[in-house]
Image 1 (tube, rainbow, N blue to C red):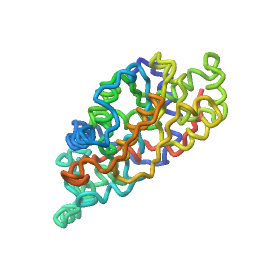
Image 2: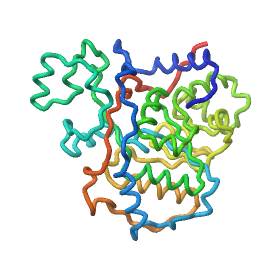
Image 3: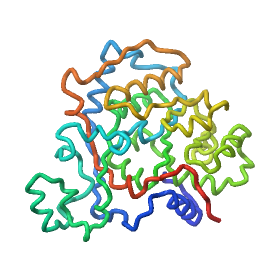
Image 4: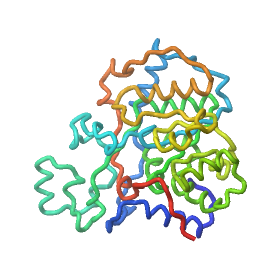
Length: 337
């Protein structure tokens, strides 16, 4: 994400991505109003540690065979749940108006409308009571995200086992920068190995002839040209000098389709994006370990952590002000010269 890229080519990549976004005249949030401070993930840690200590945990504290393995993880609906794809996350706690939802903005700095002042007294949220003419970015729908319960610390456990973790997402760089500040463990876990849509678009711009790409990967890229879903090893080799991976964990049906009947389908671990708030994140970690080890692990997971207190009391939900303005409505780019 923080690579030394040619500014002109990087700008061309951003221009090509902008063509995939919803048409809008609304501006992005003004950065001086955006809160980038890290949020607490104590609940996530509690869920993971409870699982590790349970009889359902199928592995030991240390698995030497995992060291040096490379795992690539998608972001949305793999690690993160978002309120557009998973609207049930609004229903946790006190719902839409729940005061525990971490705000995206320094709302005290934003101007309230006259009507909004009265609505605030009636229990409306800060987001819905500020002056949208003065702050037009608030005209975008309110959006929240949360990590799948237990998964962030599960990823940290994988890192401590020596697994090289890469984050690869079709989301825009600016949104991922915001999320990696709010969920600071992203930067601890993935370090500089974060590939966003901007990097993928840059890769395509630099490799139009595909002269240094393997035939297997070339066939995939030709099957669906310039697709953000085609997370082939060549992309990671270009930016990270990592020429292959052992597993790609991704919910994209497009990725599954274009990898089908190729050697890369054996490396793909497809994730179901429609799973409700549950221990599915723990199952993803277990399935990843199984794929990396090449063998099955016997386990039966229940909602670990819920014995002490319900999921809704310990998860962290955060407003995401960049989802809608930077959302890509298609995976296929049209690169400009």
